[in-house]
Image 1 (cartoon, rainbow, N blue to C red):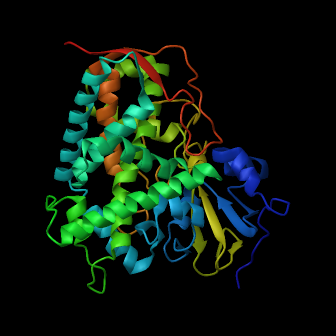
Image 2: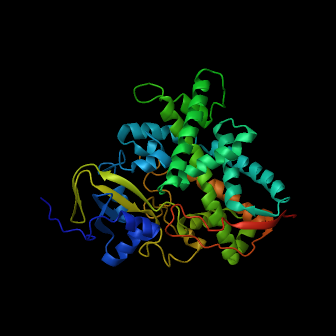
Image 3: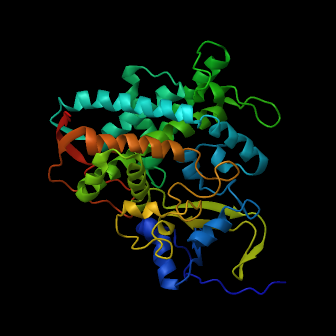
Length: 420
């Protein structure tokens, strides 16, 4: 029997309100105060373990030690993930479903996606040139919604775009909310799931014929390990698991605009058009600014790690934001410095803005490649292809609200296409 130590423990009956009050910094603050990358607390009335850092990520993504099924709170499932989605699966069912997602992430398909993104940016700039001011977050959501639907083979009428954009945005904006905001997100998901489910039914009836390599086609005809088509609700959830994250890239677009504005010396380096530096800039935006605060899992079976006992069924949170700002991993983590990625070792456990681990066998986000390539297109427009003014506004952002978005949503004006 291995020797075990008492895990650092936060005193008190429950700390759910503290998590809501401190947001992205909740785990990191306690890692600092305990001088430990692991501690025990109580959340939603139950014992929970919080941990962060590279070694913690390595054990957290060990599928022999943790399960994702039933780990996420129901309110998050009802807004962000949807029921029976890939995020909640484990073992062979997860691997099989993940292969469905990875099948649409080929270089050819991602090239198509970036071409669509460029087209939608061009159309947006045409419109912005005629506008007194542009609220970038709202416009970026619409660009991403149009892009996602076209790429995924989801037909949407022009008069439906704004409504669909708002509904997909509500799903991720309400995930940590309570009250009316939560119900807004929940109702939005119900509406979109119903609509997508009807589309899938029409695909299977050959009444709608999306491109064969598209998300809508592949997911409509995907079969589970028993050889059965996914039920309509689950298939709809998984199509939304492509559309919603692409629309959520609007958050990164806002932070990209913020970085371009706040760090003009880094923007200057982008003028060469060198893809390598654009890639580093995008990665630093993803590391530096808040996106996901943490991810959750349940202990699969009892084990001991670093002399600490993990009991079966214990809720465990991995600190995403804190790991991306860990001084043991990153030099001067509170400094925006894209050049740090020239030396990054490519580890799947020390840089985890959208989760960590392996793409194919583990739970790392299948859409990470999509996010990076789409962000590079957005960066090119914001840094090189358009000129614009950034008027006085509140560009600060909360470390408590999840997701965090600059308070002004980044307003720009006098947008003009740059003439070379």
